[in-house]
Length: 219
Image (cartoon, rainbow, N blue to C red; front, side):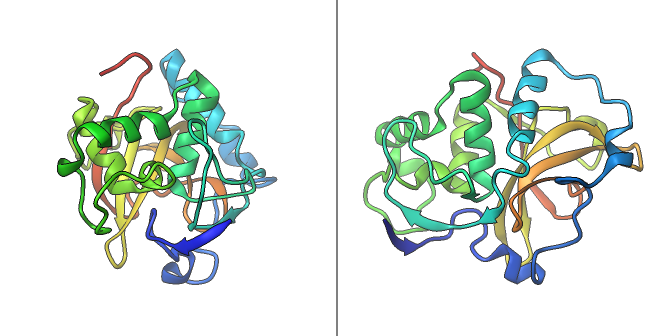
């Protein structure tokens, strides 16, 4: 049941960026030239994470930031729908059985005061907290997963998580893939920025606000 609309990872991104966001570079049935380029070297865990994210392409086709009551743990919105955070959440669950819904909720229960107070909540909400980029940023920092934010594409390794701020300071998150951009200077990202899960060259298109590496067993 849809209860209300919330800022999750840039409510209304498609509207802010115009229609269905910007042109897609790799997606369902698109990007054969990109797919033919040699993959970047990646650790085994990163290959698994990226593969789990890329499997969402063509399945998650709608950007939907509506608030919903979720099961707990392992709660999810319908696979066809979701936002940028859902790409990450689903990838970690599929690849490693890591449930960010449960991990974030438990961490917020123990250290709620340190989490962003953007939404005026007085207690954790396991239906939505893990689907909000600022909360994930804080959680990842507490897990010791934060890395420097730089302008060097080589610093962003396959499997890394990158948070960004879109026009209007809207938060966004993406997974760095092991597919090189046409320029060869950086990798493509897997994300949902308004048209479902896609693989695109968007790493440096927006201001990067956070850089994280959450390998299984880390933190």
